[in-house]
Image 1 (cartoon, helix red, strand yellow):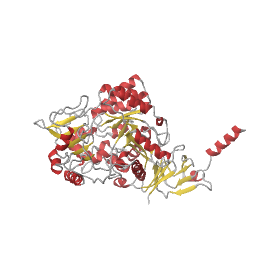
Image 2: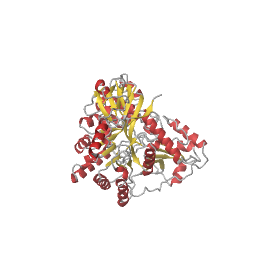
Image 3: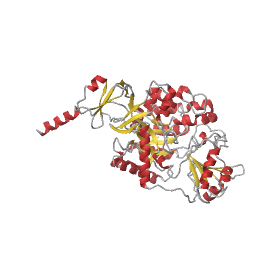
Length: 570
C-alpha cells in the first residue's frame, strides 16, 4: 500500500502542471542541435519540464501556472564566465580608481595618492596594463621618483612591477641583489648594472605602512553580493573563481546558506608550486578531501589552478621563439623567451596528482611554449593512465598563443581551454605591433580549435572593479562574443586574423554549452532542455540576427536562476 502511494505521488509530481511558462518568444536552446523553439515550461523545483512550440507548451498549464508572453523576444540559457576573480569587488573599497589610458593618467593618479598619504607610506596601483596605455610602456623609475620622492611607489601589472628608487631601497633591490634560488624571477638592470626598477615575476618585498582602509567581513560580503548582482545584470548565472582561496569559498558557502548566492560558483583553489613537494602535495590533498568537491549545481570545487608562465600583457609569457627586443616591455636580451615558473618535473608531479583524483588541473599558460609544455605533460600522463586527462576535464587557462601541434594534441586528449576573447579586443593593437602579422596567426586561434572539436570556454579574467565595461578585464559577455566574431581590437583599423573568427552560434556556445562542459556543469546547465535547471535570460534583441556591431549593446531584461528571478531591468 505504501509503495503504491509513493508511486502515485512520484507520478503526480512528474506530471504536475508547470509553475511558469515563457511563451511566444524565440527560444535559443544552445543544445546539441542548436534548436530554436517558441516556449519553455518551468516546474516549481526550478527545472525545465518542456521546450517546444507555443501550443504544445501552453497545453501543459493549469489555473496555477504563471504565464509570461515574451512578445517575440529572445531567450537564451544563462551565460557562464569560465574565469573570474571575485575579489575584484574590493579593489575600490578605499577609493575609486579612474580609467588610465596614458602615462600622464598613471602619474596623475599616483600624484593624487601621494597627496592623500603621509611621507613614507606605500603608494601602489595594480593591473594597469602597459599594452593598454597610449605609450605602450611602463612608467620609468625617474618618472615615479619625480612625483613621489618621499614615498615608495609600486606600479604592478600582472606578475611584474616597476618600482621607484625608495621602493627599491626598502625592498633591498640593489645591484648586489640575488634572485632567490629556485625563483623564475628577474630583476632588470641597465648597462651599468643598476636596477631599472622593473621586477619580472618577483613578489616585491617593499615593507612600508599604508593609509588604505581595510574592509570588514561584512563589507566584503556586501560588496561581493553587489558584484554578483552585476554579473546577473549582463546575463551571467555561473562563474568560475580561478585561483580561489578557502576563505573565499567559505564566503560563497555563507551566501548559499543565507539563500543570497545569485550565481553558481565553480572554484579552483590555487596551489603553491615553489614549495618543496610535500607542501604542494599537502595543498592538493586539502582540495581533494574538501567536502565541496562532490557534485553540486550551486557550489562545487572543480579543480586546482597554478601559474606556469608570466603575462602576455607584461612581456613575460613563455614563447617558443624569442620575444624580440622591446622598449615597451623593457626587453633588451634578443634571446629572451619569457618566464617559466614551474620545472617540467614538478609540473608532471602536479598533473599526475590532481588528474588521478578526477579533479580538473589547469595552469595559467599564456605563451605558446607554456601551452606546449602543459599539453605535452597531459600527453605523458595520459599514456600512464589512458583517458584520465579527458575524464578530469583537464584544462589550459588563457592559452593565448597556440602552436598548431598543441591544438591537435588537445583535440586528441580531450583537453579543454579557458580563454578570454576580451584580451584580443583590449590588447590586439599592441600585440600586433610587437609580434607582427605572422606570429599573430597563433593568437587565440578559435576557428582551428572549433574545427578540431576542442572545447573552448569563454571567460574574462575579471580582476578589478564592479561594472562590466569599466572593469579590468571587462566581464561583459556580449563584448566577448562580439570580439570572437569580429576579431576587432581597439584602435586597430583591421581585424586580427579574421580567419580565426567564430560564427554567432559558436560565440554563444563559448558562454553556454561549452562552458558548461568545461566547468563540469553540463548535466544541469548550459542549454535549455527538459530536466535541466531553468537558468534563463531574456534579451532586448536577437543576438543571432541583430546588426553585428549592436551585439555589444545587448541588454538583459530578466535573469532567472533555477526558475527564480534574480535580475529585472528597471
